[in-house]
Length: 479
Length: 134
Image (cartoon, rainbow over all chains, first blue to last red; front, top):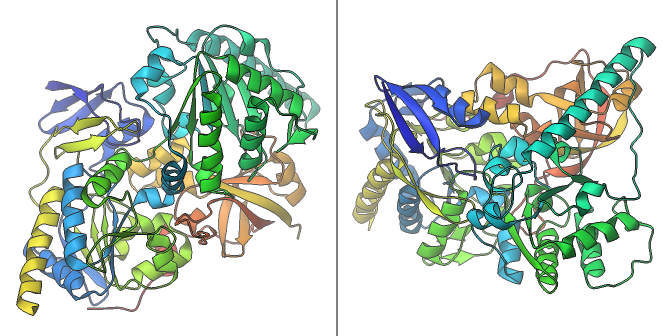
């Protein structure tokens, strides 16, 4: 039995690097320090996995050899006029680099999952610019933390503990004890509610109270957390203050804050369902902090306004820097989605949605992004690497994806591999294969190989190299 | 049959996050993403109880899900569905020139569907089934 320390967790964008794994006979038997998602991955990754190369024959996926799937995949890509190469955020930077080479070779469109995640944020950053930093700076210095349209408690479970409110920084103390005492209060109220429900035999839910003042804790000289969201999430319950915004109204709220920061008057009673008095007090807290940060989630990019919501958030940060020090960072979802953007950019000049059909990289999200191409039904083949678009794309896009020849490279059985024509069983990067990935603050960290993969499973990089080699051979013979 | 106009939000939950790591074919994943979290008063209006099936209908499709009482109430006329193949059936594919479909704040109608079943993953994929190719 050996204990492997300092393991990076290949799940979410927080990309924790302090995980400890207990390994016995090439099997991970215990996980320490990981969150529920990380532990579930390390302990169950082998449960539903692809072990053999598969190819569709007479409508059924049947086992075959690695050589045959490489041949089939290369032929599909070489014959296609406008193939889509999609995924990339759950694999290593080394594999992504080969993927870009392959996209250029076949003259296809290569896009990563940021297209349905923080793509609009990238467009805004290109328009407005971003005042950002690494997470270590925030851990030690940030005294006002905003999670805007983001629910790290569920999506990035250790983010608050490692980098923000509940982390013990050099200059800022953890707010963990304060949270525990407020949690006791909340639990008592819930118990009382349950008792009232039983006695009165009906549901007793207190009507939403709109306070006209912020709680006193917001004015104390300590680390504070504010959550802005359309619903009261678990993160919101842990916050010092929760600001509930009406769905699709984030833009109005952000612009209202911009006006207040510039000492302009708002001649309305409320904005996006929030009384102006409250907004004025929150704006005071923003201006009064030493170092504030906005972490924003896909609640801004997926609702009405999309990139314009992020424009407003970036501009608000810029305005706040006239008065104090404020930073902003998107809460990236997959562990290497930032790496996908970085590698795409240093290889082609653009972070996602890149079209090689003209022989050189073109970038025009809305035209060259994968959802738009699929909804216009323009693609004639697909290669999906470590992603599950059949499960997560809107129905029309998913239907148009699966009606063309589809190749999937994935260690797991997913709706996409079930619908594919060619399936490559790959090794889990970060568990069975090495590599590099970028944390959400653009810090590159190594992915470790902890256990050996099954003999039939190759790393993504090697599979892509073999397909690229075969495509070049086929195209050479065609030319 | 009562109907209610609602706004649909999609997003992550910790159970969905764990479920996907157990495997997309696992029972944990199925149970974590085939739910529709509703405000208890909306459930009362629709006369549905916990774990009764409801049908969510948008301009882009419909899906049958299990209604569960939201632990984050009150949020009248706002329902929450975790990300997954079932939520994707009712999402708006329009990107408005940004590349990003609209996955939050979609207008929908919700009605009780006690006699309809939640699709299994296999049955859901059959809807996508393409013509057989060799």
